[in-house]
Image (cartoon, rainbow, N blue to C red; front, side):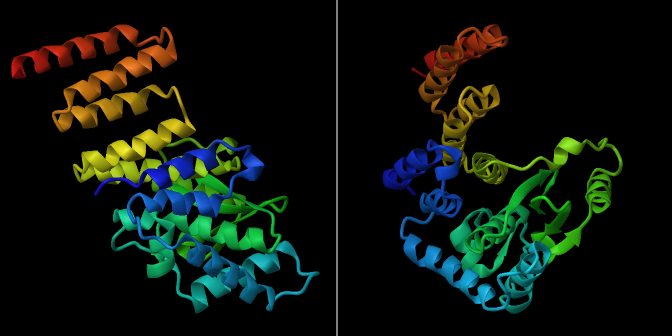
Length: 277
């Protein structure tokens, strides 16, 4: 499938705006549009509006943040049935907001994004929190967290520490920076990173390249992204594109520490290309 250049252009325009002006829900739908070019973005945004409107009827204006969060969680997970897709965790659809809305299943970060966008519409101040290996939501200024992948279960600081310890079998030392709020760009980058890993694991290198290109827009100059894109091109025997990618990195990065290694890679790619001609 050829990527829709319109969605790519709209995604780029949106993520390059100031943080406060980035519409996270719309950016996530533009991201999905490259895989689903027939996506009905206004309809999905209206669906999020409807979710928030329904919850607003169940809370008072004086409700405490924790009570609003519980009302959102009860509606999304108990009534609508949104849940973590444990059985097909590595299905790429879990990273596309339109499919999460349609199937009511996703991975931690997309289910967190759903919660964040309903909460935003209700004026509830909360943030995405990228724990190592697991994405959650923090209720701003309360010290409370919740886990959208697990039906919005409430988490304390100690619960977060225990979660990370359990996921890494105690091998990862806790750092308070794990609880730092993510920016909108951070969230989009992590969604794309998850998607990249799935595509590369499935050897869908053309799709992986499209994902990496968007990651580079968000985080330009990241050496690993250029290396991974070049590798994906090489796996498809697109050696000239691999060379162009690495040369672009050298040009944009100036004189990076790994310049000799990259130049050696380029030389190797030229050698491979010459043998094929």
